Amino acid sequence: MGILRQVPANDPLRIEVEKQIRITKGRFLVTRYRGGKLAELPKTMQLMPLSKEPGDFFVSQAFGSVLAREIWERRDQLRTNQTIGVGRRVTVLPNGGVELNSNNASGLSLRAVQAASFDLKGLNEVDLHSGSYVLHVMGEDSKVFVRSPLSEMRIRSDDSFAIMVGITTNGGMKVICLLGKISIKTKNFSETLLPGELTFALPEGFSRKMNVELSTLMVTANLLTAFEDPPPYMKKLRQQAMLQAMRTNKRFRTVVGDVKGNENFELKVLREEER
Image (cartoon, rainbow, N blue to C red; front, side, top):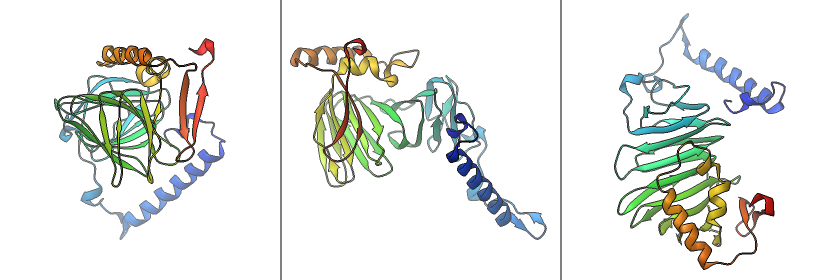
């Protein structure tokens, strides 16, 4: 509903969602009403006070509207230099963005922009419901566990790494390696990616690997350009882009979109003025 507040009040989807919210609120009140007075919420449903929320993640950058829900009292606007605890559900509304850094030296750094929703399940574990992200993990034997609506994967590397992850319309994940040599494992499949390589993680396995031009990605991806401060690994990313350019001689620059099947993808060839 937070996202739908940005659309006109007469939009059919917004009207239907508002109707279902009213129905749900009514049913909730009926279940709580006992003996002429309103019953107390079960302890499992009560939100804990903000004073009890741990500072597991540091909000290094935030703009626009970024909401935090679950476990502790609601926060309607995350701000730069605040902290947030593991267990929160974070929603980034259109024209918003947030960058979170784990306060653990080997923990996860996450960026999300525009419409995105995710749960912080641990210092190195995250559930991605919608949107696009950049994940960065520091240190030796770096790893992160990522879930989407219909798939999950464990990602590790012998050294620090960075990846770009997008949730596809079919519930899978589009994964682009930015830095490091990463190993991706699902329940039944595994894949290895180098900087500039892309694959789609689907319930039935991984798609074939593709190569994307890192120099194009650096200037077209809002995840890298929309924030006031660049990511700390931007210098290394430029170096990888230069090495990739020396290895390849491409005729076209393309942006890879959504997945339409295990072997079908949306590709947009950039015109000269978009390069």
